Length: 317
Image (tube, rainbow, N blue to C red):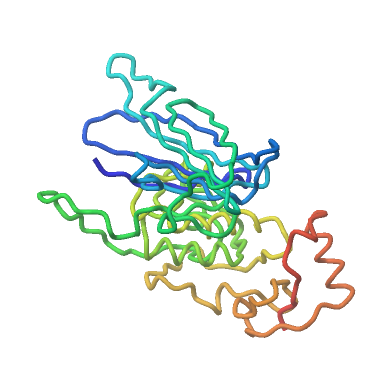
C-alpha cells in the first residue's frame, strides 16, 4: 500500500492529509486535531509535530508545525466499510509526537483529537522527518518522483496543446464550463502566485490545484502525485488576488502557450503597478522605484486594513 501526502491550506493552520491508497478500496477521511501545550497548559506555537506508524518510525506518515494556537490538523484517509460506504471516525491508532525547546510528548490514538503536554526530555520527532521551519506549512515525507511505479500499467500519452491565459489567475481564461478564472472581457488578473502556479503546474500536471479537481480549489487539497508541490503558489495567488499586489492586463484569449514559461511581455506588471520588495522581475521594465505618498495611499487602500501583514511595496517604472 502506498501513501501520499496532500496539503490543506484553509485558515492558515498547520494541516496534513495522510492518504493511503489501495486498489479497489473505498476511501473516506477522518480529521484528527493535535493540540500541543506546555507544562502550564499554554498552547505552544511552531512546535514540531509528526505522525508515525510506530515508536521506531516516528514521522513516517508526515510532519509539520503547529499554528499560532498550538494546533495541527491531520486528515487521515481510511477504508470505508463495504456495506454502508461510510467511513468510521475511529480508525487505526497513529503515534503523534510533538516537541519544542527540549520538551516533548507522544501519544498513540485512534481518536479524532489528542492533546500533547510537553515535558522536559520527552520524545522528539526525528531530525530526518519532513518538518520545515514555517508554521502552518507541511512537507511530505515522500519526495516527488520517488514513488515506485507498478509494472504492467500502460503509459498514457499526453498531447501538449498549450494553455490559454497562461500566467493569469485561474484555469485557462475561465471562460469554459467547469473552469474557474479571473479573466473577462479580454482582461485578466495576474500576480506572482498565478504566474508561478501556472509554470509549476506545467512541470507537475498533478500538483496542487493543477488537475481540474474542483475540491482542490476549495481546500487546496489533492490526491495526485507528485505530492501537491504547486499548492504554495496557488495559495499565494489566492491570497493576493484582491490585494494591491495583483495587476490587470489585456490578454489574447485565443493565444496558447505550450512552452511552460509565462510570456513576460504579455503578463508583466505595467508601469506604476505595485509589487513587493524583491519582485522587480515581474515588472515590464524589470525595475522599480520607491513609493511616494500617492503610491502609499493606493497600497493602504488596496490592502483593506492589512498593511502590516504585507511586505513593503515598490513601484514598477
